[in-house]
Image (tube, rainbow, N blue to C red):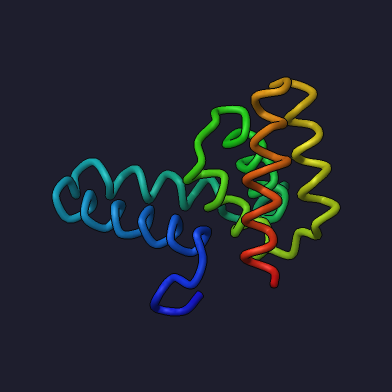
Length: 118
């Protein structure tokens, strides 16, 4: 990603990272332990980082959290997930979350994939 966002997906990633940076500065006693915990959760273990990002993408879709959807979609891509693997994760989430979860997968995920892969 360049220093200046070039599309809506990169803009959302920038806004999230900027917001977390500000929050971390203002509330280090909360953000520090949270960031350490999240880092430990996403560390490679019996489940690969790609697998963990696919799980996080599914949870983000289910929770309807657009910033997390984009953030973990980027994590999926950065960890080598294919479009097919990502779409399978969208499908599994839709099986549990119904139309609301699937709607984010067939709109936001597709748009963000186009922004991040092209």
